[in-house]
Image (cartoon, rainbow over the protein chains, first blue to last red):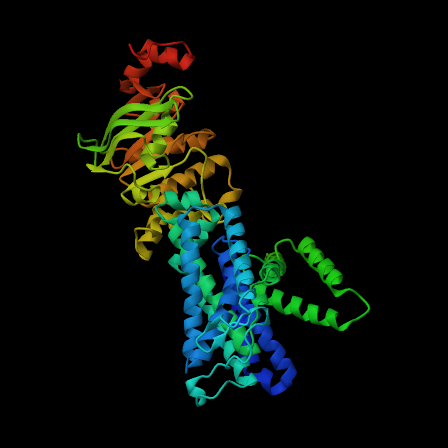
Amino acid sequence: MNRTFVNYLGPAIAVGSGILTLIFAPLILGFYEIFQLTQYVILAIFAVSMAYIWGFGGILSFGHAAVFGLGGYAYAVLAINMDSSLLAFVLAIGTCGLFSLILGYFIFYGRLNDVYLGVVTLVVALILWKLINHTSGPGYVIGDARLGGFNGIPSIPVLELPWHGGAALDPIQMFRWFLGGLIAVYVALKLLIQSKFGRIAIATKENELRATLLGYDVRQYKLLVFVIGGSIGGMAGAMWATYQTFVDPNMFSLEVSAKVLIWVMVGGVGTLLGPIAGVVLLQALSIKLGETAFINNQIVLGMILMSLVLVFPKGLLPSMELLVTRFFDRSAAQGQGVSG
Amino acid sequence: MTTTNNPLLVTKGLTKRFGGLVAVNDVNLSVSEGQLHCLIGPNGAGKSTFFKCLTGQFKSSAGIVTLEGKEVQGLQTYEIVQRGVGIKTQTPSLFDGLSVQENISLSALRNQASRQVVETLEEMLELFQITHLTRREVGQLAHGQRQLVELAAVLAAKPKLVLLDEPAAGMTGDDRIRLIQTLRDLAGRTTFIVVEHDMQFIGDIATGVTVFNRGRVFAEGSFDEIVARSDVQEIYLGKEVDVAA
């Protein structure tokens, strides 16, 4: 079988499955399952944003929670203060893009190497976490939005879309729109990766020196990848805020930054679908283990993660792709043998 | 294009200091359009430092570098490349995880339209006789093949001036012959500055040679003139020569 066909088969199946899920899942599943799936969808968008900057731009951020939290808080503050929650949603994404642009400018134009990049992003996320934790006093108010410190911001307006008559999205609509968002993000990133910009960004990840010697300004490409990833991560944060109608400083936490790295690592760095599978698998596992009281689920989850990384060092999806490709190659070879 | 008297690259008083060490000392060099010029010298003579000053990888301490009459010292490496300079490093520097095709295309992609990129790719694969490697991952290739792929990638951007740092290093017989033939074919159409140790290789390709020693230009001339000089032979054999003389 043609290898190019195999390469396109996965994304086509994924998009098709996504669209079918979007249409039929609400008809088949109950309210709780849909509510749970919406959470997976939001976290999958967050994981895809990390997968893009790490796998296709070579930017390993240890503080990706910064944009997730910022997106959530920006949406919360703007939605409370503005009439249009849709505009608040768009502006929250823009805020995260701008934040990534400023942070990325200092990182990439300051020529920080990979280690320092990891440290700086981690520290920025922790500073934001600490900062928001200390905003519990009555003075920390933006318009009508009280930041609330470690208590977070409750009663955030749910996203309203004008074509739904201006009413807040119900859980089924939210699921459909957010899953549609995930599919759109996936397709857009897939096209971006195959574009001239995407190919050069991958080249800068592969070898910065050679990319420079070919006349490309590596800093510019890395910065743009960082801004795109940051904006998508921020969108996931804003979705999280409207989904929960609540945000708290834990959105900026080290746990969130670590989790997104684990989802990408387990799913496969250098893929976009792998991290989505990583989110669903690990989150579902985490919930299942949490239901049992007689074992320490953190230890079991840790052991499973270690096993996955040891058995599939390249991640689940690349390992599966390798198996499928080998299977088709072997079938083709056998076919030739028979016909020959 | 054949060799003309129009200087393409000129350095005047180019100097690079590392603290108290003067690695490149007041170097004046002029390379004409279409020339294939070699820089030689013993280890530590300052050839590679001079090379890196030309490419913007090192910022020169003093002096000027002009390309087509315009000063380029102080520019970033990518800006110098955008002005028509191709750079091949001493150790092959490639996108190891990508195919030969992608490595060459990425170079052409910068200044050519998609259709032209395909034409350039085919042209380079044929020129270096590496069509059979098109879909191979570069990281899996032998050293000599990697050297050829890097050169193909550099030339794919159609530079006016190509700077090659030890292009024949580690090459086996066939690859080496192929490289010599290609450089001979291209000489006259493209301008080359080659840093090289291998005198036999230089004899096969060069039209002009500059000898470096202790950061200075020690001698200049044709290959035959240079190899005939006893003082050049002495610095290569490690005997002391009075540089000031």
